[in-house]
Structure formats: structure tokens, C-alpha cells
Length: 157
Image (cartoon, rainbow, N blue to C red):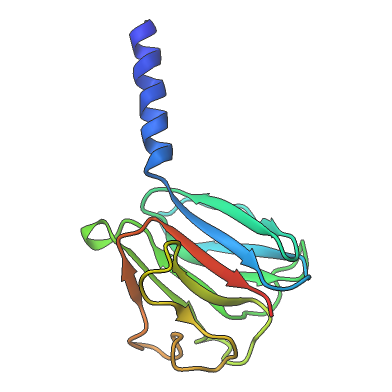
């Protein structure tokens, strides 16, 4: 029985070590709520509070696919704004990501940048929307890919 507990503990440690995450970095003094939109078949992620000028690390389940946007309200996700989108552990176990302005090209209050934590790789998004480095229309060629499992999402002005 003790061996089963050890094996279970090792499996838990391994899953934590290989977990995906998004690290939200607030660029201004406004508190925001991250509203998550999971793709069918992906786990539901509860709303996440990010304090102004704060940094919040959110673990993401293996294979999760979906989007998120931010709101200044803790209860209402508000109108559709700029979204971060990702598919973790996709083709070749890579993470596919972009910042999407397809629903609102001029919202400059929420998601601005999404990129691998190392800083290597392409930064999707921009300082001021609209721009050419975000996903702006269907079939846009702005989806990026990385081997990394931890991404930074910069929010706020």
C-alpha cells in the first residue's frame, strides 16, 4: 500500500512539473478579472483576479484549448474585447497561440501581448490596436507556435 502512495505522489509531482501555465502581468493600476472560454472537451477554468500592477500565475490543464479576455468587473465579463487564444500540447506537443482582435479591433483595455515566458519566439499582440501583429480576420496568418509550456500574457494599458 505504501508503494501505491509513493507512485501516486510521483505521478502528481510529474504532472506539476510538466504543467502548462499562463502568467498574467498587469501593466497598469486597474484590477481585472480574466474570463475563460474553454473549447469543447477542455476543462473549465474559473475566473481569475489580477490586481493592478500584479502578476498571477495560472496553471492550465494538459491539452487545454480556449480563449480568455479581461474585464474591469469581478462579476460581468462585459462585451467581447481583445482575446488571448491557445491550444496547449497540440500538434507535436507544441503550444499554438495568438492575440485575437477579430471581434473588436479597437479595445485597448485588456489583453495586449502573449508570448513564451523565456521571451524567445514571436510576441503576438500589440501596444495599440488595431495592428498587424494580432489575429484580425478569419484565416489570418498570425497564429504562433512554441515548444514552451509557460506563456506571459500582458494586460492593461
